[in-house]
Length: 81
Image (cartoon, rainbow, N blue to C red; front, side):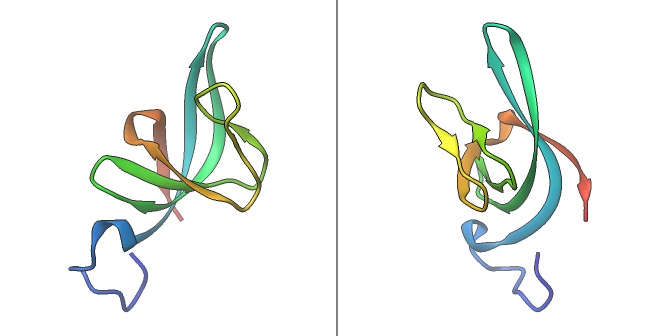
């Protein structure tokens, strides 16, 4: 949470700054890409990355600086900043 933000703010607006890995399974096995978790909803994390990241699906890419929601099971949290 951001300092000064209400603990009762909606989950989709809560701000979290944590380092994590985005784990995606492909035919060659798992790939892990470093990301930053910037928000949370009950079932998903809002993530941001400094590099171009392939997301699940055929043509989904996360561009640098862009944020996107991903399922919690696809994210491995490493710790807070």
